[in-house]
Length: 213
Length: 72
Image 1: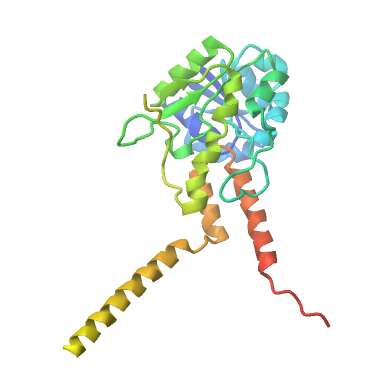
Image 2 (image 1 turned 90 degrees about the vertical axis):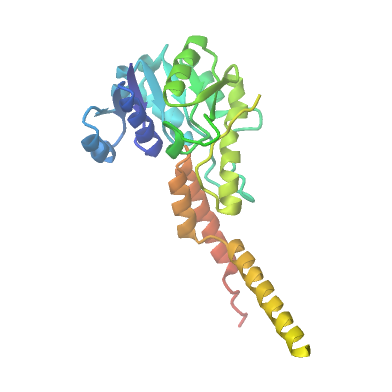
């Protein structure tokens, strides 16, 4: 599969590495190609281009950027390059205010989510929330003694979710589909929950969520 | 007999003191550097913003802890 990864941070590089590991073709999009020079030197098969280049290339896109920059990056990618495509959305609407008692603040309102806002802005794009509430060390091939952790996903387009489910399963996750894009209001705050043990007890160890049924 | 009791009491106090110190040590606040490295290591999507938020928080805390200059 051709995958366009928008972003040049750790999440972008980790997910790009995962796609390369599982033999997908990857083009990464960035504003500043120098940020990915070292990564490209280590991963000869990855191509580096602009946001528009990566968006044009990918059958599936990954929006691996800061939450507050997500809309701007989609605009830079170009509506014509993302329309009708599946976009994996690991972004979190984390505010630039300090956390209160270990609880992060968000810039979205109480009854909205970042993905919901993006979906409203780009209603012809198939966003699927995934990979937002885990650290990069467990995004690809997570190893836990108690079995596969759960990847919570949601999105309005069923075929897009099937594609993302296959990717998550390939990356070693058990997927729990939480329904339509509205469910991002429930999935995005899991990132806040994930961070609390770190802020309160200095526990930044490897961890993920698991749904028991 | 009395000396033995005193010895046991002193040993008990020393053990309690050691435990108390260990408990206190674990509650010491993280330094900015420790927090930054911890969050950088965790690499959750959006972690960069968290790091910035903590820097703001830490500098606010530092300002709050600075002694208030005495009025002249």
